[in-house]
Image (cartoon, helix red, strand yellow):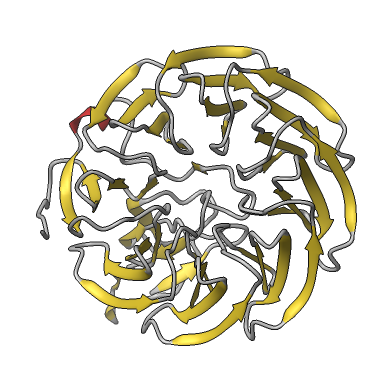
Length: 406
């Protein structure tokens, strides 16, 4: 059975076989503790009976969670000692374009492919369903409450049944939707290149409110503590009341803000095309610090364990202290996408490969030869990453139970 642990989007699968002295094997429903980690674990009842349970994590939306940290704190299979041994569990697709970060929920991988949204079985890549839109799909899906949400270049935002792929509703904006949606408290938030951020009822698609900026909104909104944060090509980052859409504050940078902010510990982290990484007070919008690189910043930051990880068009990948903005380490790398962090490893997709770096030192641990440029997802011991050259989505894991679907 699958249970949702409190305070997280992790799906927890519990398999209990409690041996009672009189009743024999039985199954018991439990709520996994928040500290539960992926893998197989043992437990002992008050009567001394032993049992095991398996826990798995969902990567349910762009950036892992609604605050877009790009950090999976529950990964415990892949680590700095074994990540260099990744092999292909499977690959799906043939010369298709998959310009979105895949999401993985309840054993299903959802991703955009050309004009389609696809759902495949995470264990073997068999196709479960495909939904075709009228334009390219550059919006990473979000899965919540049995529905999958995404946008398309045909100007529409879609909600589909996550199991069947059947359409639940669609909402038409005034331009292309490249922004990835986020769902919080029954509301879907998404940007459009018509300059607006929209708040839609996640069940019906009814517009609750919209907010107009002075430029295209391809930034994917983040939600934390009742506030939605996003950037615009009008050079501003905005903080709006998530319930009403009323502006709390905005902060002007010197360039377009295309990336998606990360909100951690009361601080908003983001990059701008003015070459700078910013940290702002989440409540007031006051600048805490900024760090100047030598190139534009279009990739979103990853924030984990007191470090901000981000790349710049200057050909450098940076690790900055979250409190001060001081540089901890940097490495020369052609970064084209948002990095993700899991269990001490930073996964960085570039134009030529996906590199695995030690999160503490920046040392290269391994590299997977994919012509990429799009952000991976790392969950339950598997890295899901797109190979742009071959047009395939790979599932990379440790050498066991491997196979490939061509």
